[in-house]
Amino acid sequence: MKNSNLHICDAIIHPGELANLALPLPEQYSCSPLYMPIKVLHGKTKGPCLVIFSILKGDELNGLEIANRVVSALDPKDISGTVIAVPVLNVYGLTHYPNRLPSGHNLANCFPGDEKGSFGERIAYAFTQEVLKKADCCIELQTGDKNHNILPQIYCNFDNQQARRLARVFTTPVITKVENKNNRLRQTTEDLHIPLLVYQAGEAMRFDEGAITTGIEGTMNIMRALGILAGGVNTDVRPIASRDEEWIVAHTGGVLHTEVNLGQNVKKGDILGTITDPFGGTDFSEPVKAHQEGIIVGINTSPFIYEGLELFKIATFLDTSKAENVIEEWQQQQPDTQAT
Image (cartoon, rainbow, N blue to C red):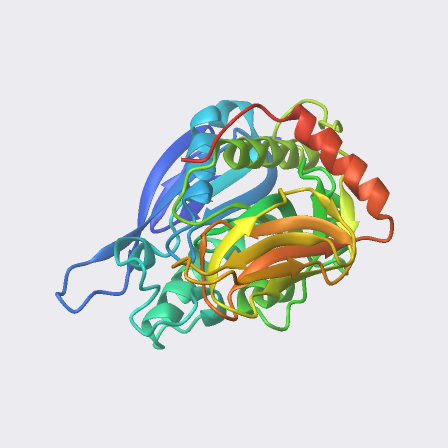
């Protein structure tokens, strides 16, 4: 069935068209305007609307690259439905890094927004009204924090059956349950009955080609599962769901010497690294031990450690051996890439 015209940002997008739009955002103190870049691929035939977005904090460079490459790889004449990509949702956060918003708040907790509210609430309102409400499914593209490298994984609300079904075809080795109550963006999508997948991989302010490739392949697989793209769904990766994830924090400051890798299986009591005196004046050496059995899914990549800093993130599974096999199989399929 032929698609209908799409009305977005005071523009009319006809079936089979690609449009680059700019959504006006709140002004800065200099009175200079800001615009949110929006890329729309509107298929000739009817189908669901997938919204892809990134950079809520201002530093998720992998997500920006994934969104742009996905759009570049698509032709609106070859899709059914609509793909709306927002590579940079928080333009202020990107251009004023490390400041996320003038208030310093997290944009995710400004949703669903308020037309007359704070700077962040006005951005959230514009995005919700113009973009989010058009979605049948959403993918948020994240990275770990600065100096926190994350094994590629999908986060979703397990109570949302469609989100959980789609998460299994994203081609990441791990799926992790998240709660909506602590994140107003996630709660907003639930209130709008829109399944949300959150892809997280790599670390902030760095391009990681492996994380980018996995994100692109996963997004394309979601499009096939939704019927936006023709072709069968890639089922080479059979992910496993984690029960819980928890960071181990440093009990002392110093220099961290890491002894484990992402995806590695560890037992309770295993030494994950050691913290030593940066000045070499003493024989001080503090081992960092695993507090439980599981898989390493996050590592602090900075050698300089403060007391209380997050060091290693361990995910637990009902069957750790099975999880280890899934991750090893996934790693063997990945190209030999390196973060930059």
